[in-house]
Image 1 (cartoon, rainbow, N blue to C red):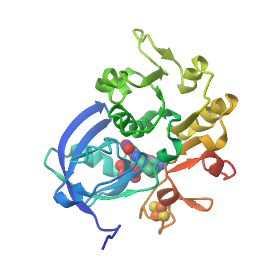
Image 2 (image 1 turned 135 degrees about the vertical axis):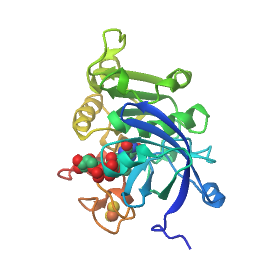
Image 3 (image 1 turned 90 degrees about the vertical axis):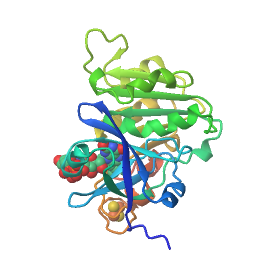
Length: 272
Ligand SMILES: Cc1cc2nc3c(=O)[nH]c(=O)nc-3n(C[C@H](O)[C@H](O)[C@H](O)COP(=O)(O)OP(=O)(O)OC[C@H]3O[C@@H](n4cnc5c(N)ncnc54)[C@H](O)[C@@H]3O)c2cc1C
Ligand code: FES
C-alpha cells in the first residue's frame, strides 16, 4: 500500500555547479521499482531529506518523460541545503512524493504558454522546456521570461542554445556586466516588447515581490485571472495536507497547490 510518509532512498549520480550557491543534482532511486514508478507532472515537487538535517520541498526539474533519473536544482540557504551541497556522487538522500498538483497542461491544448521565472523560481521552468523540446507537450508556442540578478546567477546557461531551437527565451538582468547585450532591469522589462497575449496561459514562479507586478502587466494586456497561474512557496512539513503548516485561506499549498490560478488566490490576504 502506498504510504506518502515513507521515504525512499535515492543515490546522487551527478552534481553540476549552476551558480556560486546552486547545484543541479541528478538522482536515481536505489530500488529500481521506485524509479520506474516515478510519474510526475510539471510543477510538482519532491520532499528531499537527509538524516539529522530534515526535509524540504524541491521542484522536479528534469523531463517527465526520461524517468531513469530525476533532477533537482538546489540553492543553499540553510541547514538542509548547506549539508546537501557537501554531499558527493554516490551519497544517499531520502525522497518522498511527488506531491502537489502541477500546472493542468491538458486543459491548455494548443494554447501558447508563457513561463515567467525569477531567481530560484526559474528551476521549475526546466521540466516544461525539456518536454516541449521533446515534442511531448500539446501546446502552441512556449515563451520563457527570466529575470535574474546578473550573468553569474543564471541557471542552466549551458542549455540555452539548445532551448532556443524551439523556445523563445527572453532574459532581463537587474545588474548585468558591461558586456551584457540583452535586456536590463527586472523581469517586467520584458513585457515592453510584447503586447499580444491572446490565446496564452501564464505561469509565474519566483520571489513573492515579483508576483504583484507581473500579474499587473498580464492583466494590463487583457489576460484573464483564470489564465494566470502562480506557484507558491511555503514552509512544508508533511507535504500531504495534514500538518497545516502551508495553509493559505482554505487551501494547503502542498496538496491543493503549489500551482494556483490567480482567480483562486486574488481574494486571499497574504497569498502573495
Ligand atoms: C513547492 C516548493 C518548491 C521548491 N522548490 C525549490 C527548488 O526547486 N530549489 C530550491 O533551491 N528551493 C526550492 N524551494 C525552497 C526550499 O524548499 C527551501 O529553500 C528549503 O526549505 C530550505 O531548507 P534549509 O533547511 O536549507 O533552510 P532553513 O535552515 O530551513 O532556512 C534557511 C533560511 O531560509 C528561510 N526559508 C527556508 N525555506 C523557506 C521558504 N520556503 N520560504 C521562505 N523562507 C524560507 C528560513 O526562514 C531561513 O531564514 C521550494 C519550496 C517549495 C515550497
Ligand atoms: S505541509 Fe503539511 S499541510 Fe502542507
